Length: 265
Image 1 (tube, rainbow, N blue to C red):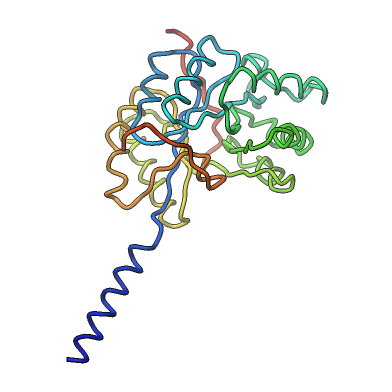
Image 2: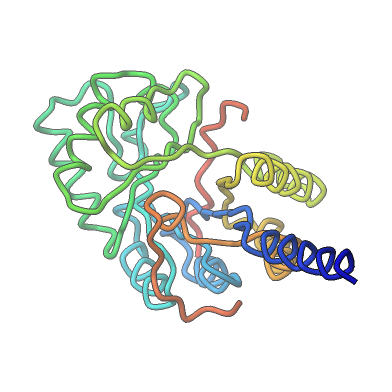
């Protein structure tokens, strides 16, 4: 009888311990919002706390940021930084290597003001600028001058020093783990999503970045509601970086600068 009692107690303890273990966390960021309102609204309406990254100086950017905030989504400034392939000046609000420190600060301030409710920054493109320590220190100085902001390195090049400079500067920061849709074929998006889940299981947390492509949005609409039963916790990017979530009213590594989504409505 004593042996049976001991077995039962140990079983209960093991079950409670297993339940107490935190679920692996997954954060999803949808980039390149700001041009198309209908597409952005579909991204905003994705189930769960999917984060929305908005390009500055775009026709619908401030409106989209406000709508995302009203839906309880974390809003990021998707800051255009100069890539190797072309001048970032082609992106509205783009920051380039030839800018002075003063001009850098001016553009950053204007871009941040253009995306209301932004709680953090992640880079749009930037395969050139993110490998330059001096400019990344400027960026972290600007972020650090505003209370509560954090940085996510979109990691468009393996030579990026952005995360290390953020850490040196005391800026809360993380780095993207998976691009979900470098290839927009449905089977490729599904494959990258599985890779994201494997990384989350191994590391305890992982960040995926996608874009408002029809295949990506359709896949996430179907896949996100299943995450909890698969043993994952979907969180906003702020919770993953800072450990703080926002109230939600929502239901339940190659180099890649990535094109912005079409500007047509």
